[in-house]
Image 1 (cartoon, rainbow, N blue to C red):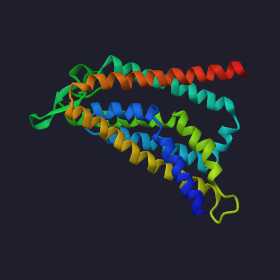
Image 2: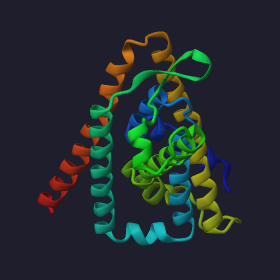
Image 3: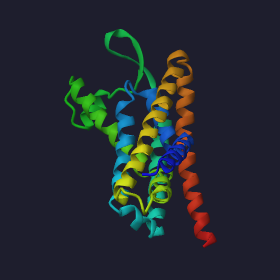
Length: 235
């Protein structure tokens, strides 16, 4: 591939990732409330890898040719963000004791919640595994339905390919998509760890930041709905 195209694509991808959006709000909440950011971060990356794979095999072009699919995905993403935002506001993070008696940040699964999801009483490993996969699935849902990610991977990514290049088009799209995923991994790790650092040194700020991240998810969801309604009216 052309080196200049790769550099231009890398810069554009990084700038897009640096723009706050649903991924930011979700990972800030994860950084504050989870003992490990890994499940949420991996979920975000898995969601984007699925989209990259779809774009590389040609599904992205088909989706771009059907505007109603983008509209449906955007509205689904809006509903998902509203749901997550409401959940964060309804159940703000609390300070919880962690192993060894040290103070940490987390949301534990209580006895009633454990029974509701079929986790035996006194089985912390099963509860931890269940929470890991739940957070991973949530992260994949946030990124897989993120309109910003869909815009980058479905609409903008093909513009950096070279039809006369030595690499087949699917390979070019896959490489460019992996650059985007790599940018996400670097930036979002910093976002989540930054939120955790704030909470560690200013525990009193945890509830405030939690409310902001929950409200951000709700606002972003409403903005997506308003944008789609505005486009429909204009059309």
